[in-house]
Length: 310
Ligand SMILES: Nc1ncnc2c1ncn2[C@@H]1O[C@H](COP(=O)(O)OP(=O)(O)OP(=O)(O)O)[C@@H](O)[C@H]1O
Image 1 (cartoon, protein in one colour):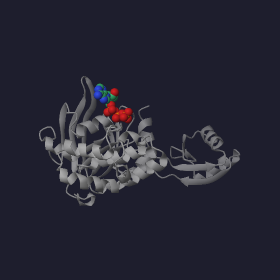
Image 2 (cartoon, protein in one colour):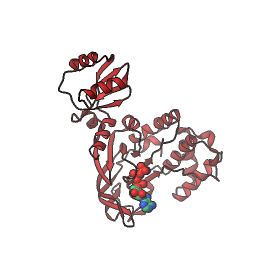
Image 3 (tube, rainbow, N blue to C red):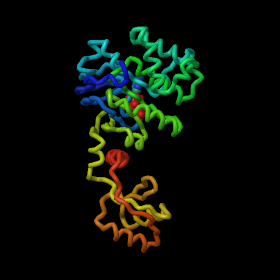
Image 4 (spheres, rainbow, N blue to C red):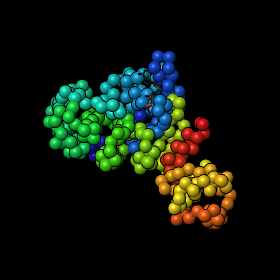
């Protein structure tokens, strides 16, 4: 099937899912319904993102609750597992085989018709730019090359749901940007759940944002909702010649601040007018280059949620 051709209803749902490892309870009553689109999952190390993925792709059975893929339970109807692919953070290619052999082997594991697999490999190699790597040994590839081929492998069965665990972590910024541009379109035709620790990347890619904490979903909303959240938001940002001095001066005046890009941001809506703040800074000898209202970002929302747990 062509990459563009997959437009039937796709999705995954978690209903009251509790899951973990032996006596360790990780997911705690998770409810989530995801349809087509690019969903970004954020959360601190160990909060349960990978465990959520494992339950979703049929590797880890929930202790309680149900996961449904396109309306079917993968533990009762194993053929539906083919509709879900999971690209773990750790490398997946067998380093003893070429990229083509890896993908062919994966086609066999997934029970795909052999005659379709070669065409599909060629399509994916063009789409993710690894045609010239097909006959290279997977053990010789750089992480960026290996990641492109691994994404191709994950897409080989043409899944409707795709879990990507930190797909760009550890890549240099140019390669990471390349991979992002390949991934960006996938949400048009399937349900993508993409975990990352990079808040700027989340801001760029997310259509819907999910934030986990201690095995629970603590935020679930569209990127528009993130931007519209008017409460607790950073409000005014100052770009000064001396950022540290500007921050110190604002804190001396009792404001809470944080640094975002090159701006010192006043994190609680100040009672004082913006012009009065600039005047006060000038009085303290702070040379302000630019003042702007800060847009609500994934970073500000995430920081607010995290600070509420401190
Ligand atoms: N196979 C396992 N056996 C036992 N405990 C595990 C196993 N895998 C994960 N855990 C534990 O489950 C908890 C959640 O881990 P998980 O990998 O889901 O977190 P994560 O949010 O993906 O973390 P990270 O951001 O570091 O990848 C952690 O306490 C972890 O130690």
